[in-house]
Length: 96
Image (cartoon, rainbow, N blue to C red):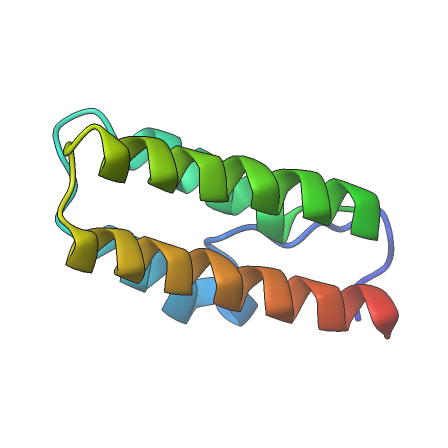
């Protein structure tokens, strides 16, 4: 586990597969940077409370996109999985 001052980001090797999966999801123009920012908030959470808050924001973001029909349900599911995987990985790191 990295020292507390070092925060994992979506571009770090630990999360490279997750970052790639977000990049490979076909999102409407302008949505990608917001999706990546939410992923960074999840992977960079310093506490479980921050992680829960970031995960909730990501879930709400996807729900909003899906409910306004900005993305199809398959795309929404891909985002949910990417965010959930990132949150699970970060939670394990915070426990360690």
